[in-house]
Image 1 (cartoon, rainbow, N blue to C red):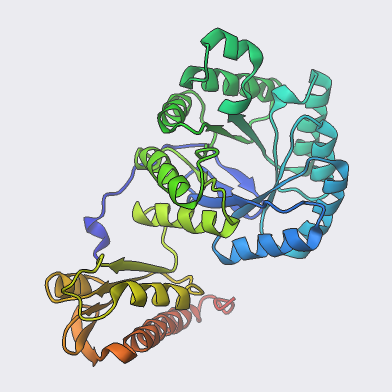
Image 2 (image 1 turned 30 degrees about the horizontal axis):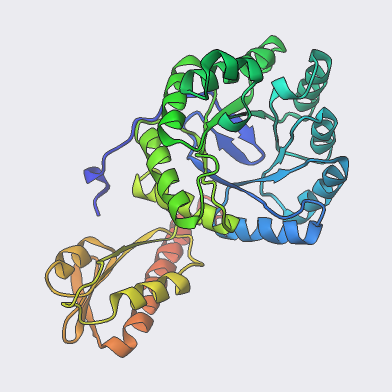
Length: 378
């Protein structure tokens, strides 16, 4: 697929912050986040979950630090998971924020308004500055300040933005500019309008999410629509898909959203027909099997799996590798029929061809890089 035919999203220009090794904002790729749902004090379980999320493509992982014991566990988790940036999620207790920063957090998620008096806020800001880490302000429709609830009658976009601006004001008063902001609600339009408004008022990066979106399917749909509306307008620098599901699923849906908008590419982009009685092989089964087998690949590649000759040849020609159903099935590589495969061998042949093509591409890249960068293979 020629990139030139893709719509290019013009992204909002924002100030850049660094969450560990990941740049957020200022034109950096949109990062995918998730959050662990283990008990933080269970170090082994939390480490396993962080590692699974990273394997699925998480750029940043957030961990809740509700107690000082959790902050102690956070230090051990940080030491065991390597370079992945960890955000410490803090509520109410500013001491947990200080302890998490000391324990190696790469960012503090904290609402300056809910951790008490100015003295406490000053300490947290001084601590973040000392450790060179950013702060994320996270406003949530479910926990708006009482006076704003009274003023607006119910959570609406203006109430969310006013709450965010209060927190922003506190950080700016302390001369602290390295922060990002999220405005989450479970209602899509409320969320979208709030981000649209805030995007015009501050230049810091924005963390997108629809909160409490729901289970795997409904939550994925809600998040895709809400985040998609904002991302298509160029709003958003890092995303988290909130699902009542395994964090790995959040990461996968996040990547699918970014891939569908051509904002990032990773792994196999599968184009598949919904299948009908014209199909020559079981498309749904083949796609499920290929997805499972090719899950370990990070290298982007378009793979088309089409069951018959109506749309098959057209789609298969456009992809790097494609199959159009027939007797036997025709396999296209870079637009030309290169192989024929019978049903019983189809998935094996496609997997082999995908892996060969990617290996060739990586070898080519390594040899292109080698005279300049001896460590290109790292």
